[in-house]
Each structure stands twice: as structure tokens, then as C-alpha cells.
Image 1 (cartoon, one colour):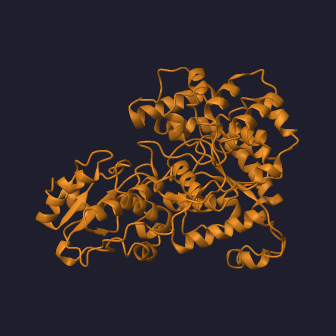
Image 2 (spheres, rainbow, N blue to C red):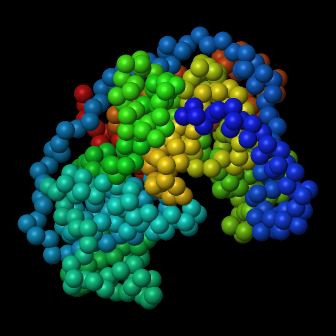
Image 3 (cartoon, helix red, strand yellow):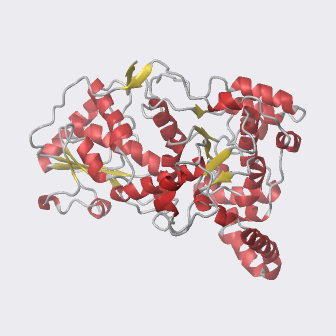
Length: 511
């Protein structure tokens, strides 16, 4: 909202910035201790300079020519969502057995686990207990299923497919997460292989259900195969992902408000206090706009887990090396390759500067409304500033919503991610800077609904950014040509690929 961008905030921001720069000199002992306790913070005090200054200078002076084509929705591609499963439901009148699953990872990894849990319950003709979400070890988020997803909607949509309960009957009061954490338990399944078949569950878990009435499966992430599954099981997984899983009402309400604020320019008289409640009615006559959601996956874990150079100099390299040592005992992804080799192979995450140049080359200009979906960008505002110079109308959760509106999701990584997911699903165009669980989930969901999604050609971009003599016209031509067929065109799922990322043909029918 514009009240967050007032002249007062700019003056205050400048004073705060000057104070931050003086901090190492005013409190040297503090920064000495920080360098040992949290080495990844070092790079925050060394603002990275633009690495592609020639391209950036030209991009800032760019003239767009294909804007209309950019915003055009996708044409019908011969596939549509399936109304109902071809196979009638075989729900038992009363299931005697219960399945519990314990899901780790972030929001989108847990989302896939929930879909698989429903499928396993169906395979075993068991009642599913609402899945338990483990505390996220990275973000320390303790949000439960019911904090994130509309549980009543979930149960109602699937009522003809499987039995689901919010809590176990009193007879199984002992079957808690703490119970399984303290000792080896006969009814806990720890041996489920990655991508297990339906037969594996029938042969290995059914006997446990017969003996104990309940089976607790942990770990459960990626524990059900995508291939050689009965058609009705595949369709059920799709139904869970694309129909049964919707976010809680307050996430949807805030998401709708953000989408409206991105689509319609605010009026000067609008009150921030009543903004959320009145946003739709107050803007209905103001004309429609379009916006892009950019999932900028450039956090410190992503940066540290690659062997790429991101332009932060020796301080950043040292900080990342120390962080790797603390978190992963020094292990680093693709460390046997040089930075040039990794970039030419498309294995380096795109920095905010690089994703900005990609968007500019595709034809987006400084009037484009851009929503930044990201938890925390490594390097902070110093690293985002180049992207912001290219797209001054860039917004995020903090700029669009007041602190009061964000109070229920503050500090909760899963709810913050859920809000970004929701806004991403309602954007005209979605683009993710680097592959990952959020990318896979949103791209798959938008594919299911035939919505435009730009998939960066990582190898092409890596090679272009390595070429320091490439001119802006050459760069722009190569980018446009290299992304002609990467804007939401359907790709059918290949063996072992996820049905949640590639919903054709398992989740969709011929139009």
C-alpha cells in the first residue's frame, strides 16, 4: 500500500541505512561475535554490485514491443480437468483400521505428502487421521494441518472416497508423535521405500493394521510411486491436490485482498484500517490491471548449497563456506565443477539481478506490476535493489498489507508460503527464478488450469550471462527465442516424474 511508501518512510529508511553502515564501527565487539556465531550474516554488510552492468544499463533504457503478446492467455491445448473419476467409489461402510502419517519438509513437500497419504489410505481401505505436520527444522514453524488447510472442506470433498477423522478414537489415545519418538514401536512403519508400490503397502502395512488396528508411517515423504498405479488411485491423488486442499479462510481473504490491490490502483482516500474489508467494492469501477508473480527462490540455503559465485566477493564466499560447514559439514552441491561450468549447464540459481534482466528481455517494462513471492532473499535489500530499479512497481506482502492484516501469519513460514501460493495461482503470469518444491507445486497447479507460466531456460541464461560482450539486442533476441515454448505449453509426464508437477495425462482428460 502506498502509505508504506511515503516520503516519511523514505527519510526514515535513509537514516536507518546510515545507522546500519555505522554499526560495525560503533559496536565492533558485536560484529566480531556475529562473525563466529552466524557467518552467513557477513554478506549482509557487503552490498553486491551488479554483475551485468552493461546489460542492466541497456535494460533500464529499454523499449517494449511485445507487451500485448506477453499478457495473452494460453490457447486451449486439447486437455481439460476431469469432472469425475471413471471408476466408482469403493468406500467401505465402516473402516476398522487407521492410518497416521508424519510429514516433514516445507509447505509444498507436505502438500504432496498429504495427497499420497489419502492414496495410501484408499489402497489399504483404512481411515486416514488428519496428517501430522512436523515442526520445520529450518523455519521452526509449528503450524498444523488445520492452521493451513480448510479441514472441513478437505473431509467433505473426499467423503465418497475415504474415511477421514480429525482425531483418533479414545481406544488409540496412546498413538501420538511423542509415543513413536521415544522407542521402537511395532506399529510404526519406518521402512517404506522411496516411491513404494501399492503392493508394498498391501504386503507390509496391512498385516500391521490387522494386528494393531493402526499403523503410523514415518518418514512418509515421497513414499508412494508415481508409476504403475491404478487409474483410480492416480485420479484420487489429483482430486486431493487440485480440489480438496484449499487454504483456511483468512489466508484466502488476505490473498484476495492482495490480488485486488495488485490489479487495481489504490485511491488516495482509502483507509488502511478498512482496506481488507472494503477492497473489492471500492475498486470495482476503477478498471482492471494485470500482474506477474515472481517466486524469487534465493535464500541462504539455496546459495550455500550450490558452488556458484554470486558476486558478493571474498566475504560472501567465506560466509557461505562457514555456513555449509555448520549446516552440512562442508558438503556442497556440484562442488567438482567450476562456476563457469555450472552456469553453462544451468545449475546456478538466478540472482534477483539476473531474473530482472530475463523479465526485461521478455518485454516487461517499468509499468509492470510485479509481486515478489519469497521468504527471505540472501543479501537482503542490497541484492534486490537492481531488480527494483528495473521494476519500480514491485510489491510483496509487507508493502501490500498492513502489519495488522499480517498479524495472523507473522513468523509462520507455512502460512506465508500459503499466501504466496494463493497469489501465485491468481496472477496473470507466474515465473519462478529456480526450480524447487514451490515452483513444482504452483507450475503443476497452473498447468492443470491452463494458466500462463514462464519456465526460465537456465542453461541458455547461464551461457548468456557468461558472455560479457553480448549486447542488449542480442541478449533480448536470444531470450525471447529461447522462451517461446516455455510459457505454459503442456508437457506430458515422463516415467518417475511427479503427477503434481506434470498433471497430463493422469489428472486430465482430452478436451
